[in-house]
Structures are given as structure tokens and as C-alpha cells.
View 1 (cartoon, rainbow, N blue to C red):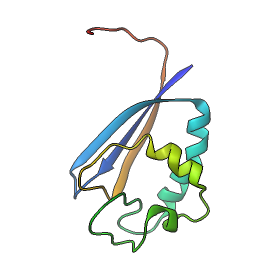
View 2 (cartoon, helix red, strand yellow):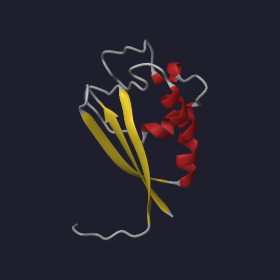
View 3 (cartoon, helix red, strand yellow):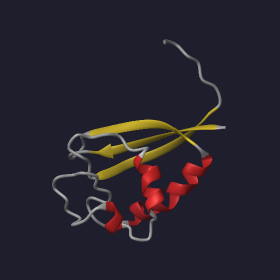
View 4 (cartoon, one colour):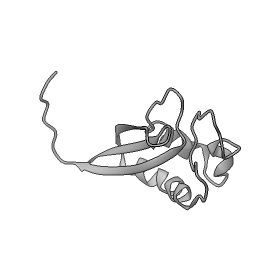
Length: 105
């Protein structure tokens, strides 16, 4: 089974960017503890990535010390590129892909 993950981030107070990527079931299971920790985080900016106004006072590895580097690496590959960085993960959706149809190449 193929899976498609969509990660939507908040770059600057409701300026959003998103990325869709193919992932394995193993990748999905790997990032679940990180997403659970981010959801529990009790501050305005629970996942800052290259965001210039870092309100959290640290990088994500410092915010979530119980999460391993390989989990961050896996999740980083799923994140959209944002020139000015982003401060929050808005949502993460996983879809099972049963069939694909090429419409243009």
C-alpha cells in the first residue's frame, strides 16, 4: 500500500505552506511520537523551523529532547520549504493511495 502525507505549516500568522510526499507505513509510525509531543506542547510556536522570531528559545531538538535524531530527519523530509521558516505545524494528513492516474507528463 502507498501512503501520501500532507504537512501544512504556518509561516507567519495564517500564511500557510504545505507539502505532499509519499511515505511508508514505517515512516508514519516513526513520526507519530513527535507529532504527539508537538500536539501536547503548550506554547504559541510548538515547532519552529528556521523561524527568525524564535519565541520558544531553542530549536526543535531542544524542545523535544526525548525524540531521536532519526525521527527528526524522517519528518524533515516531509516538511515544506519556507524561505523565512515557519513556527507551527497546522495539520498532518495521511492518505492511502490505491490508484493513481497520470493526466499529464
